[in-house]
Image (cartoon, rainbow, N blue to C red; front, side):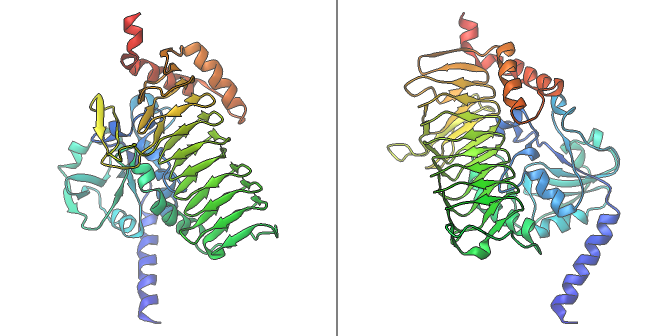
Length: 420
């Protein structure tokens, strides 16, 4: 047997042995940067963020071939659970690769993996009482290789292209793409295009010369759509007629996308179905962007973009020339809404009207440039129930309780409530 094949065989045997003796892995929220990922982490653990084709949790599950759990905020734990018992605790913002996965699998109980003072992973017998401080007392191993860590909201779109490539390789390995039956669809670099079962593509142009294109199960690409890779269209989602997808973009499951989109991530269950530009942006779940709405992703003076920082209670410099819209779950905007560079929209906000609204719109705001009032819980819940029912899902007590908690903990941002 050639030396290379022997090496691959040894790695496979080692991984198989480790999988047999690993019962559980749990992705923990690192308090050192969880706040820097708000508003997205108001409603989810860090590891439920989508970057690339998959969420961070889904990436680890595919590497480990095992279901993972979450160690997160108390009010999220009913929805995001974990299994007790001996477990590998993994930093929730950490994106896996083969070398990192094997290194973490090799950790013994009482060992912790670090990189420059940041805890990457730890093997523990008591995940329920796990803390980073507790891991500091364990046997420390320093990880010397590069990592991808999602610590800021803009890291989601910054790392999206490379994560699409990694996820594409992970998902499509040893699999065959569904063939294209439409003679009017033009493909460039077909070997970099993967189409899942049930997907429909008609009279579109798919150009994967700059990176892979992934079309998920039962997804649809309609007539006249122009798509450049890297690009991911997840399960049951649609690219509408005439849309222009400019690359480095992910459209999560059960979503609709139209208009012009560049280097953006839509987590899922959200719609931007009409004309209008979305660039260098992150959109949560259950969002809707009205027709002809646009965001700026570049300042007129080309200066670095500042963005609202929840941990600071003010604006922080991203150091980026291009940075667009950050929109939390269940947020909506009306037709012709204009978002300035680096705008942050909180959970459950409803934005409408002419002019540019402020660059930071607190959760459960109602209004626009002319001023805001509060989107009261009862009215918000009525909308959320209708929106989720359209996708065949219930706005149940668990979801309701999470959003009521978010309403409470974001109250101090709605300064007009104090003024009235």
